[in-house]
Image 1 (tube, rainbow, N blue to C red):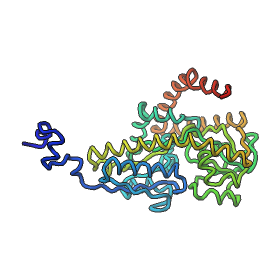
Image 2: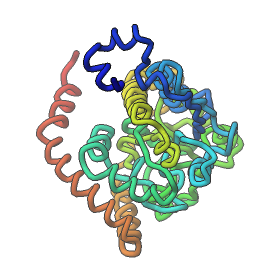
Image 3: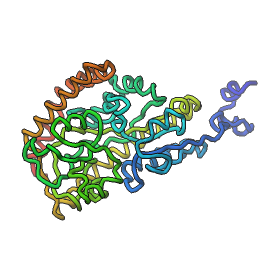
Image 4: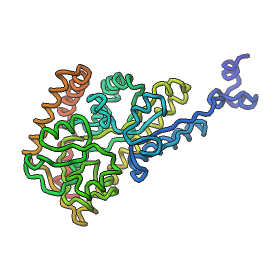
Length: 360
């Protein structure tokens, strides 16, 4: 009698009693390495990798383990795509817009100016064309992505001086994310610097940087930016919901059994839900603490936002005119976003406005 018939006739208890183990228990142990672009001190960002590894180990009964390595341990913070292309590691945890030097369309997988919120980003990737289109691009570099966490709407960053008009951006040395955002800010006169989070504090303290945008209150406070810059701006247009992702080596994934492939996807979903909700809980507490200790919270003036929109539209048009892949992804995102805006106008936006106007 073959195993399939035995299981059907005897049931799982009978199989175990007969000493015939289910196929999942017979699999060889799997060991993967994950590199992240973040220091261990950022347990929100780097921590998504740790959560993933813990879940993989638990779901596999210890047969599948992933070691997680912070930026600088296996490679530089921004070395993940090269490592995946060369089959040096099985996966990474990073932000796609760090790699727009390879292709500007990478930015769409994380965040772009006047882009999607966290919920919209997830819907576009999982139920729209987002993930499909982006993985077609990433296949050239031997990886595909799974969402690891979304930071939600990010802050406008820390500044040594007030930003009263678009002219105040001229000559400003600022750490910011790469890609379309960096290019559009350059049109406003910003001297963009894309550097790892761990290097920013010292640069800001010494005056090598005049400003920095990273994520939001919780991470920014942990990195100490409030100690070396006074003004903290909100109403930023560049990251409505930044998606951090697991970059998974295509060859390594293909070698896994169907059970382990399912475990990888399930563990990513667990990490994504955990990390995204964690930011909603942590950011308000940190913001209140920093404002209480002297941080000056300020909104960007309308003229600044309008200048940012004009600059971003120019960059989108320039890339779309010469890069077919960029244009294809951009147009799909915008079509999806237009429907989302229509729905939000009669659903979430009025509700949020109502809640902001009542006393609870």
